[in-house]
Every structure is written in structure tokens, then in C-alpha cells.
Image 1: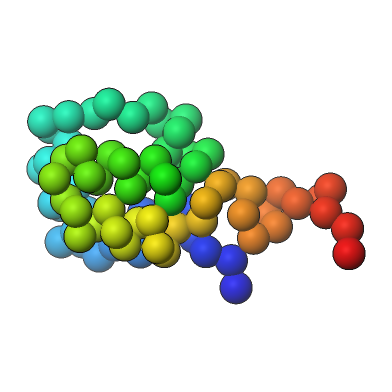
Image 2 (image 1 turned 30 degrees about the vertical axis):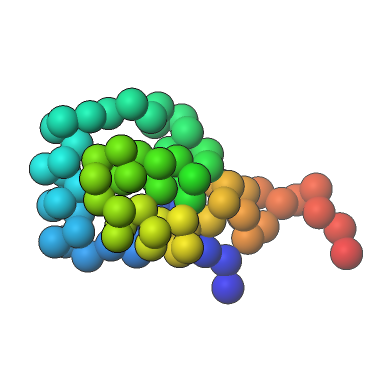
Length: 78
């Protein structure tokens, strides 16, 4: 099963509230990065916000790229 590409798939409401609260202090990573390379970008962003536990989960549970899992892998052949 492919990994998700959005944080709402891996974080509960209390986690999301922590991210929103912390986000008011920093926002250095572009939305394009967050959408195209979710695991790395969210991991970096959450680390910058001081949410180290969530950064670890993002890196482990989110897809490496938005194309991961074959969502846009029409070019892949077996």
C-alpha cells in the first residue's frame, strides 16, 4: 500500500493544532516542496518548528514524493 502524501492522513487533530500554533513562528519551506516531496519537506518544516516527534513521524509515514506509490506512474512498466 502506498504511503500518503498529506499530513492529515498521519496526524490527528491535536497534532494538527500543534503544527498550526507553531507555524505562526516560522514558515520557511515552500508549499511546492511540501506537496512534491512530502516526507522530506514536512520533516524539515516540523523540525524548524521544534516539533521533533512529528518530524520523525512525517519522515517515516509520508511518501518520499507526490508520485510515490504509482499515483502518477503511468511511465512505469513491469
